[in-house]
Image (cartoon, rainbow, N blue to C red):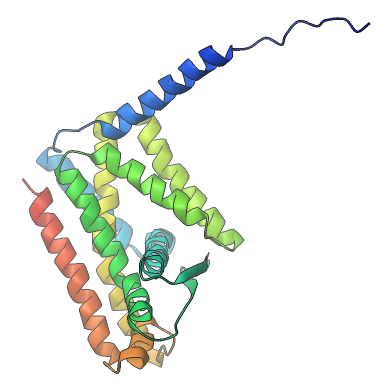
Length: 254
């Protein structure tokens, strides 16, 4: 007759449930915590740091990957919102990316999907600035983590997977280990970076079109879809991104 063995040590189901709820409560408390406005000096320092990440050439080669994540993510969101079927996103080491969606090759859905990329980082930065202005710097960082987690499900190549994971790990480390004041500072750097980087990518787009043509660029695809010249689309991208920057500055400056 088999003997009876003692149960393995560990938490009882009820106790494990309590611990699980406690951990969730702690996370929720972090997400919902409010932070006071940054002092003017800190605000200026975060803006300068973000500007350096955008204008310094060697740093930009690395940090531009974050803009590509936002760019391709915006294509993906637009595709889903307009009823297209998202087939996957690929991010490349040269900071380019491709978002593949299935549906009608013409029409409003395709136009909105193609137009979303270059305005995506600026609009994301504007939405994040609204959260900062309301005192939800930590909640903004957790929202970024949630968006990165959703994006990860659509990545279809190794470099893209690595890029999103590294970005997510950096944001998570800031939300989990930095003091509240430093978390708010990190959040402001992220927002300033998105707002400043968005116009630069549009400038680079037009520079590439002027030098050797870019028949597969978003602007030229939109020109073929709508009959509106690609330069007009470039101007529209720039107008939206600069407008987002100006509005965010009004919200964030004391």
